[in-house]
Length: 112
Length: 113
Image 1 (tube, rainbow over the protein chains, first blue to last red):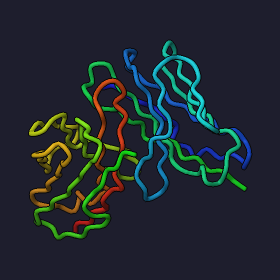
Image 2: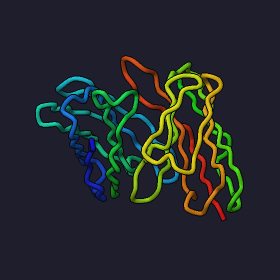
Image 3: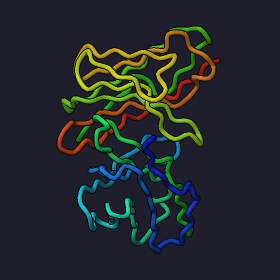
């Protein structure tokens, strides 16, 4: 069973701090990695995708991928209360057809 | 922008009723997916389709069926609704190569009484 693991949290950070969210995956052949944000009662929203080792920055968000260690992380700089949500990691596994495997998510709380 | 729409935001049905949930996407995506999401269990894949009239079972297909007669539309059918099918149902679509990212509809919160 291929797995994507996330700490469920909640992860609490003060406003203005850097939030660091981590995800590990079991399929070494995975090629595509995604971060989704989900507000309570809403559907997941794609915020970042990353396909090669290293960092990818988009505004306050940075995705980091390390295929050798099989982890992907999301950094949120200058965290705001509006960033409080559950963040889902998703992985496109090799040979998995067109599906993504989702982690169960990390709840982030940004405190004033 | 990719737009995925679902027929209802909230739905209340009685046990034993046949329930239809519809999903439409406007980006000409090949792939469409139905998930359910329950507290503590994350997203669970029910069925998916990679082409018109094609379907594949996901992780929890029991009690559900699907239909894809047109590329833009993917329907989820609960043949005889049961209380344990009370859940949030999410539809998603994605392109095939090279990226596979999925875009979700707003969700349907189904309550079966």
